[in-house]
Image (spheres, helix red, strand yellow):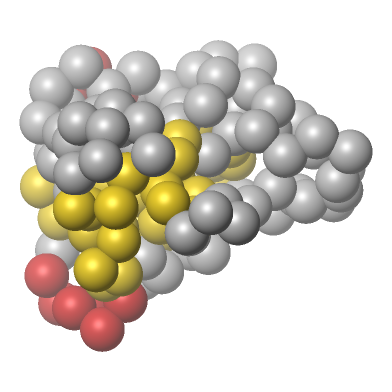
Length: 131
């Protein structure tokens, strides 16, 4: 199992504006490109298999568009969008990517029960959001 490292800024394909979630507030600091989940308090947190314990699937609501501090307004990018990561991401085109035990970070291997992928490799430096 390998974690997908995001070391720089991200950009995204704006063709799917309808899958952006806005009007939300962060519950913690979040880095651009981190996978996120909206918890029961209505705030956005980094998503990961350790975040939701005792479940067979893992909550996921989208990826952070940029860096956000705790309490900042946030917009998430959802299903169908292409997210360009940095050249050092080490992605494989066509490969599935899941949430990892490290909150916000993707993995090339499924961790939780019957969990489904949240992204698929589009190129060596881009993913397509699939959930």
